[in-house]
Image (cartoon, rainbow, N blue to C red; front, side):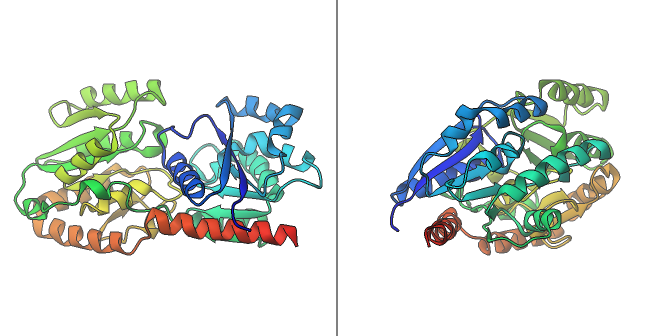
Length: 362
C-alpha cells in the first residue's frame, strides 16, 4: 500500500488552540505530505450530554463509513462515538483512536468521573488500535481495558518553535532580577493558573509572571483570575499577554527564566517540552505525564496538584539561587534534545497506520 484514504473524526476545527489539536494537525499535515488523502470529519463542540445524541445519527455514521483504509478518531469525541462505532457494520474501516488523555483521569467529583469512565470504556472497547501521546496515557487506557491491542506511543514533536530560537540568553539567568516566570496555556481550571497566582502571593522574592493564553475558552474562569490578581495584590507582578502566535510565543520563552504551569493533569504537556528548547526549567505537578519530561530537581520541579505552598517554595529557591536556575536550565536543554521531532513522531505513526491497514486487508 502506498497512499491511504484516512478519515479523522474531531470536534470543531483543527485550528483550535490546544496541545491535542496541535498533535492532530501535525499528523494531518504529515499524512498529506506523504501522499495520503485525509478527510476531516468534524462535529460541532457541544455539551457532553448533547454529544451522546450523535450516536443515533445515521448521517453521522455514513460520514465515517466511506471506504477509508483507516478511520482515525480523537478520543475527545468519545461521547459521540461510544455506541455509533458498534453500528458501523462489518465492512467498516479499522478504527484507530488518538488518545491524548482520558476525561475520567481529570480531577473532578468521583460520581462524575464514574459516568465518564463508563462511556469512555465503552468507546475504547470499540477501537481496534491506539495512538498514545505518552506512556502515562497508554497505561490509563490499558488499565481500563485490561486487553492489549495494537498501539504506539508517539510523543508530540519538540520542534514547532525551533525556527525562532534558542539564542544565547542563558547567561542572563545568572543575574536577571526579578525572576521571570512564564505561564503558557488556555485559561481553564485544569491548567492550575489559580494555584500559581496563590503561590506567587506567598513569594517574598522579586519575581514577575507573564501569562500567555486565551481567556475565550472559559470567560467566567478568566474573570475569576483577574479578580484574584487584584484580591491577592499582584497587579504589579502579573502581565496578561493574551493569545500569541508562534513567533510571539517564542520571544516570550526566550525572555523568560522559568516555565510555570501547575496543571491538575496533563496527558503529556507539550509546552513543558517546547519551553525546554529555550532552556526553561518547568514547574509542574506530579499528576499525569509531566514526569515523563520533568525530573524533579534536575530540569524542573514537580509538586502535588493544588499545593500552592510547595510551588511557592520552588519559586523562592530559583529566585534566591541563580546557580540552581542555571543548572536546571542546562539540564532542560539536554532533556529537550532527547525527544523526537514532529517529523519523526508522525512518521512512526504513519508506519503504524499502514501496518493496521495492511493487516485489515489480509
